[in-house]
Length: 64
Length: 253
Image (cartoon, rainbow over all chains, first blue to last red; front, side, top):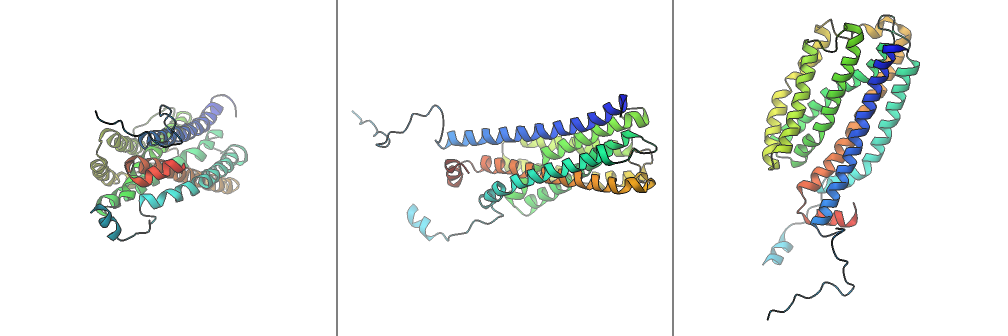
């Protein structure tokens, strides 16, 4: 294959493979983002959350 | 009072039809489907690009058929499946079916776009034009617009049940386009996919059959993997307040 024919043929295959790979990568990233959000929602693995004390959560402060 | 109610409620095993029971199946199937898709597509592309003989009339441009036709098959098949799932979700009140309809739409849109784009790349050297307004191409364009409409409905409506109802209406009404696409291959003679093409050369017939079926199977396995993976995300998003989702997230499942 030479010239424009090669461009059309290889362009078709390259575009098809690129589309499929892009969708797959976006899907994996979305899956990871959903899991991260759910982890934050349910209190697991949020980077801003303070480490849990071995003695358990602190008791609520007494009212004056 | 709450505890007594909880203890008297009958225990139910999670079934495959429930979102909760479906997740482990997704986790187990996706790697195998993805591997199968890769193997089938690699085989089909090798046949199409390296093994299949040069076509007497279209020359090497004919090799685009090995990606264009399976992409068209998938765009139509996925829409039929989507309409079926949306209908079952709407009239059978099956949540998982409605979620599956939502999960199928982006992959279907991707294949519809691939079919249109590869069709243009095929049409340019054969017809001398990137686009011709014939029945088949217009029907493919409408199909892609339907996919985009379904994606937009789910993106734009926060209430998932309302979005499912609207998607079912669009999908069931839009499924009327499928017979037009299927019939246009025979009725419209100016198409790049000449039905007599595979029959002209007996040597190329086997390669054509193997190549098309391999890529078609690969695309089908890929669509299944992406739909299941997306379905898992949709289930987790919609059921995010459930205790079992919290357990799944905690356990990393």
